[in-house]
Image 1: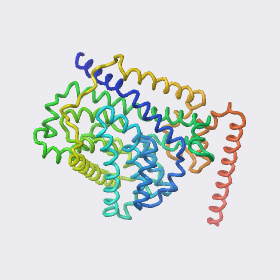
Image 2: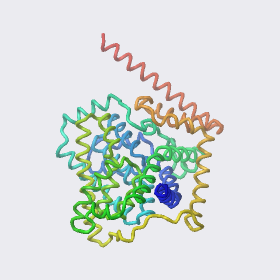
Image 3: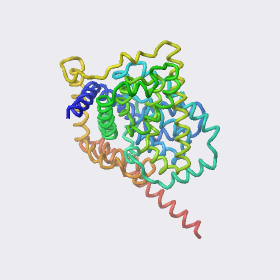
Image 4: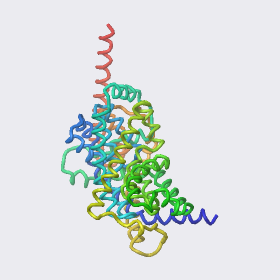
Length: 436
């Protein structure tokens, strides 16, 4: 029981240490997502040119940090016409370049690790694009496309399909500071928490258990900590393998990364470990459902190579600049709750979270929680259906108390629904004509 208590104590201390940072990160991410429409993402990712991949990285960084949602959204983008390479670059950015990951890395591990993610993420995307150019055959891509069109459900499909951004004209600030902007931010904020809390709690508990029960000497031997040069070669190769069997993704793998860094994994190795949340076993199974067995195996191989390559690059760049921190000074948060700056920050940001949660509930957002895990084809595929999905469960239905604004929203939804019905009648007529 003492061992269990010790593990829970470490997990609890970690949780308290990062609470304010998580709220800050998700709030900033919600602000960005509130003004970036997913229809814009699809339009901009039509090929695999360097400029397009750069845009994919920026748009991915402005999207959900939930790995399952990122994978589902990438499949959705691919089905709607986005280039496959660009969709995968978007997926990588969604889980490795998001604001909340950078904040929690800086707090738990140091700013160097945040910088490593920002440097290594684009390198990983470039390596992956090169590998796709060299080895991705048209036949395999065509088979993957046909399999994707089957619409087999994976995980967090409903969440990936939701577009909770604020529509309409106006500047970034005007849309954001409006009543609809406040509602949109609250919806994105709460839905992001709902999407990742299981992975986050799982990561904290696993990290606490490993820190309490596995001695540092085991990790030091495993990561060849006594042989620095070999460790730099071994780390980026074994880091992703540890991630694959850890089952933890999204930002939930950061607490475990702290334990591994303290245990002696190399700087490039821990960076590759953090990147590898996109090849954990549950997500590999989703790749198989989405794209078929052959493409799932291809993604595993190419992602692994790209992650390891990014780890080596980070090791060389940061080592050459003298920016690799000393792992001997790494410490796990063990202080628990005390009256210090962390406590005051937690109180302040918990108040912010409460305000956003109240707004979420009062504006009908709870209905959206039931739709998070829906299948990819449970929603219509055009703008009108996204309004019904992202707004009827939230922004549109929730604005009933906003007078003329609510009326405008209802009229907009009705018009969108009418357009969709007309489109379906047109398609039906076309099919009938062809049959004749």
